Image (cartoon, rainbow, N blue to C red; front, top):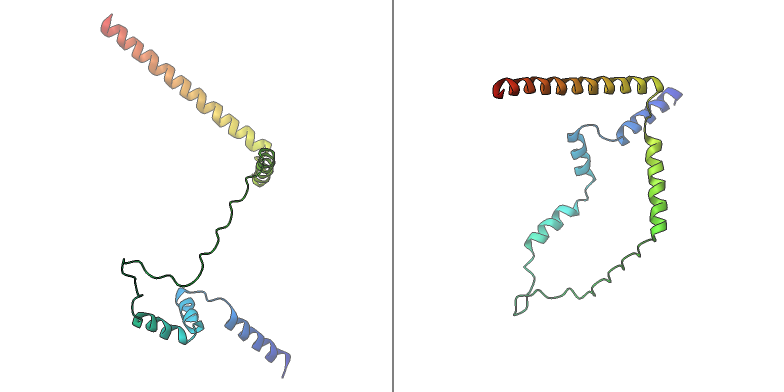
Length: 138
């Protein structure tokens, strides 16, 4: 067997074991992976009679003890929670993409121009309404 044949076999094997790309291929792979006895077990569940119930309408116990509930975890101290909060804040701040100096100057300029425009617009509307009220009511 040559090296090219061995490489071809490995490539075919990796194609067979790779994850399916389409939904139909995934469904087909899932269907082929199911054991044969599973479908018959579902049919057997449908054929089973209903559970026996006692005279007052309550179903009988399965014979198992009720599992113990896990105890509530003790709440950490205030200091521990504060330290954890601070650690998480720092972790999130490391993920932030901070603007460069040039971007910051640009953003600041845009905000200042917009605020100046809004102040001028409000002043202009105030002046127009003031003149209109004085003209109307003298």
